[in-house]
Length: 373
Image (cartoon, rainbow, N blue to C red; front, side):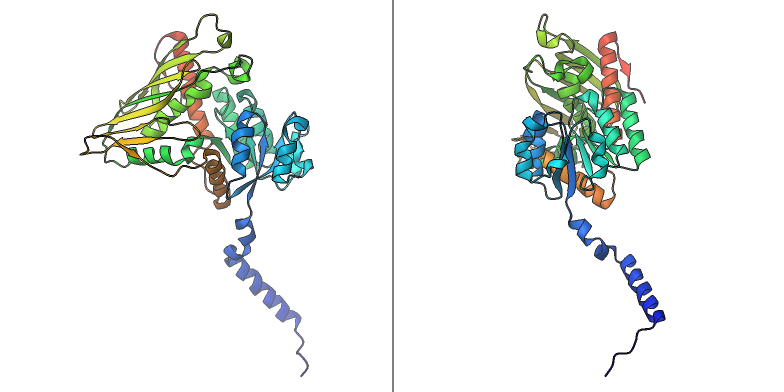
């Protein structure tokens, strides 16, 4: 029997019904996007990117390496290009950096450059229509941090700062224990972050590039830990610095800073930052117990201890470790897919920089300094 002809009215009606069904079923319409890995472009192929971030991208579930930006492509990228199967055209120089806007594979630009370069390359990436994950410290000044935040808002893109410890199990468990209420009010925090720095010619010892010494690079871990462990913001700080006389490494920046943070609740935190010796721990004393971690910031082998109410001794909390950078990038990819704000947005980097600025002012003036709002 011959098939009946479909009228124009029937076709139009069926088209409308199909379009309506698709609009009401985004989980069907977006299934391919939901499975697609988020493409990362790593800017700056220094030690951190080469030894930690790029290897982590080989283990991520939701992210993948799709592009590189470097001033030394011939030396640094051939092995990476081969391992990840990158298109050689996706290796950019700093001269043609802005052309990343034409690469649809790039969703996120991960800025892994010296501190002084963070604002420029973050803002240019945002203007190119890309989301940005920027290493900490966010920038060298409060003003630059605000410029980066404003650029993200203007571009309607997400900006996350790379606080890797906010994505690994041990530090997140410490936050959970301290915020849970069973330990009571936090009475004191003692935190220290430091190592003996080597090569005196490296950028971290150049004030213009680094913005400061140990406090900007390693001490920020101790300061930031006090903020995320307590869930409070410092309102006043006091700091002293010391550098070994005639040590060529510390011609421009401080070797060690000892500092105190005062919080609105009355909590006091005593902290150490150093390029002269190793320290890698925090101890949070509460009304009914304590939480302690040593080491707390290393890339692996972290350890966490807690003395819970009613217990005579502290006990070790054993957790399954995660790659810090892999967890961080997977989390940001999840934020982009779900349209949610990251837990460490640009505002988090700005808050850290306000505290650090006050610390340097205190060290210079020899007096307590209020943290700027």
